[in-house]
Image (cartoon, rainbow, N blue to C red; front, side):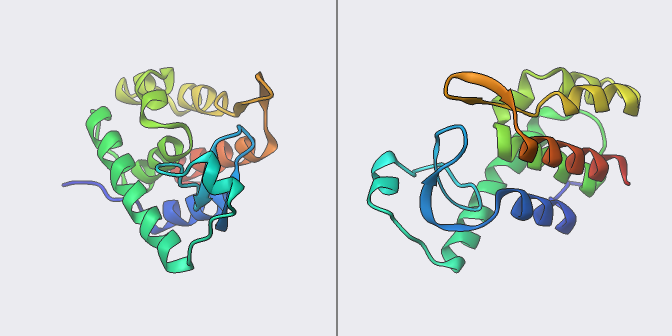
Length: 154
């Protein structure tokens, strides 16, 4: 059976990303709109203060989810619950499928490592480049902990 992103995971993504109907630069300096959508959003969109509707933000979220779900499905080689799958989709939604693909986290999940080992790998992904420097961000730390809790069934 094919996993889908659970309602809990979608809620986690929405809460973590927030919904901004006007284009903006995220803390890492990437042009963003809606629920963290970056595809097709440009610096000019931010400068022009481009806006979208709530229904457009929902449509963009669904389109983004489809991309990240496909990426996670391709990478994960073990059976997962929909909450576990959704936690990984949230991770990929935030960091990209490439980050998940090259991560020790994915290797540990596919190797059926202990939850403690998975936790150590998961929680280290709380940093972003701010003014060229890799720094822990409180929002990312909170998100990683929420994703891990969902993955662990807590």
